[in-house]
Image 1: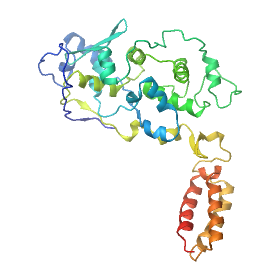
Image 2 (image 1 turned 45 degrees about the vertical axis):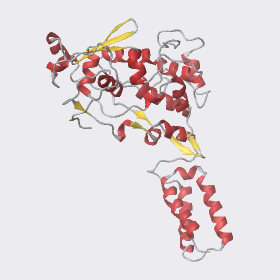
Image 3 (image 1 turned 60 degrees about the horizontal axis):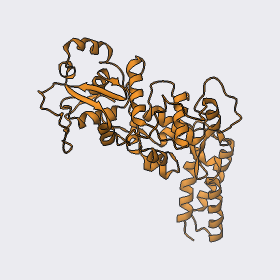
Image 4 (image 1 turned 180 degrees about the vertical axis):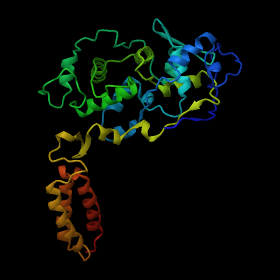
Length: 363
């Protein structure tokens, strides 16, 4: 999506910390972004064109209505709001935020357009809306009892006896685990490459979610930021979160380059299709587990054999249809809709109008 410039009004968020002071105006340029003049060339060389991870979000309500457990797991962990964050974001300010980012102990510090920002509980509670880190586990730096990468991966497979290669691919995972993995690599711990593989960190997060270990998400987010900052091939994560932090800390955003949420940022039914997760029998299954499944490019012979009688039935509907026949035909269509053949686009296009015609036919 093309980047554009837009004035984004900021608003005061009630009483502000005493550290807020009136600052001179800062332009949307290198002079305004970086206070230390000697560091500006370094920023232009290393960070000005550093790519951003495409920010993603989900509609938790939609996934909950589809029967997935991830919204409940996120609610329990306190990250449901974080996973649905969206809106405008400021690519240049995200880069400045990461360029100046430093860590001392478990606290992150940065500076954007002269505004000092401390990543403390005030930020995590009021902006990300995640619980305080007390009594939560920093899973990447703490030993988690009973966690074993291979055993955890095996327990999450749709076919537990599947031969495991060196690369622990996400494709063979159960539907719930596959979706969780997708949300981890795109939202919670986003990375630019290897989305199809299950890293040890990915499996550890899934393991903790499923056995209800409370994760220190603020530390996990900061560790992800630090990794992306250090590795040149890593795109910078959390554009939505960082932009909301800048607004909360009253970083001037007027005139800054900004991008807005679009359908491509949402993880939805199209994303499920990319993961080969399809609707079947009132729920979701992996496409490879559905017999006789073919995509829209091919039409199985079974479907072709059914399309001809459908056309005959359609012609019959031009006249009054006796109630017994109407009941029989509706039962036949109901059976077809619960079969694997209904997954095929050609069948859906023929069956749905036919069913409506039967229901609307005169008696």
